[in-house]
Length: 268
Image 1 (cartoon, rainbow, N blue to C red):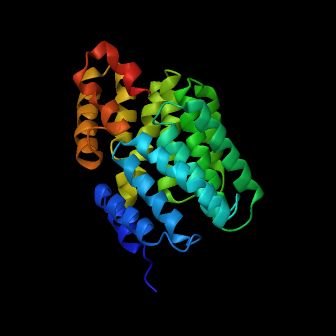
Image 2 (image 1 turned 180 degrees about the vertical axis):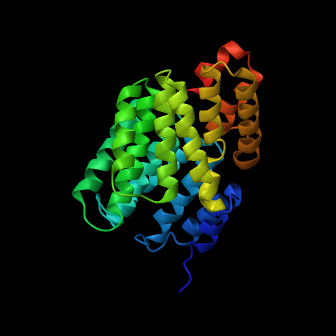
C-alpha cells in the first residue's frame, strides 16, 4: 500500500520544503482520529523538519515538542523512531536556537540509548547523534573534544555517505577552531569530494556547508579573496535552497561584512 506520507517525503527530498510542510500537516490533521494513528506523529516530524529547513526554528521546536510525547506513547521511549525524532529535534532546532548545551545533552542521551539498543537502525542513529554532539561541542568552543569524537566516529564501522560527509565537516570545523587551517582545508576538500559522489537528495541538506568550511580555512591561511568568493557562493546556494532565514544562509552572509569580522562568523 502507498504510504499516506509518500508525497510529503518526496517533496521534502526534492527540496520543496514549504509544500512538504503543508502536505505533512494536512496528513496529520486528516488522520487525527483515531488517537493512536502512527502516521500523525510521523507527519508532524516531517513538518518540523521542513519548517527547520525554512529557518522557522521556534515553530519547528514547538511541533517537535507536540510530537515527542505521542512518539513515546505509540512507539516507546527507546524505539528507533522516537530516538530519530529526539536527534532531529536537537540538531535542527536546539542548535539553531543557540541552545548548544541542551543539544549536547540530548544528543549524548540519544547516542547512549542507541548504543544500548538492537536492530539495524541503531548504529546509524548513534552516528547521527554523535554528529549533533560534535556540532554542539564546536559551537561551545570545545574544539579538541569535538575533534576527538569526530575522529572516533570516522574510524567506526562505515556509515552512509551523507553521515560520513557531516562527520568530516564536523572535524573540519574543530580543526578550524584550533587554528589548524591547513588540516581543516584538507579535511574540507575530502568532504567536498565525497559530496560530489552523493545523489542530489543527499547533497541538498548540506548545501553551503563545505564552502563555509573551506572559506574559514582559507581566511585563516590569509587567502581572503578566495575565502570571500567561497562564502559568497555559499550564500547564493543557501538562499536558493533554504531561504533567507536559515542559519546557514545567515552565516554565509558574512561575505557582506567587513573582513575582520569574518572569522568569528564563519567558524560558528
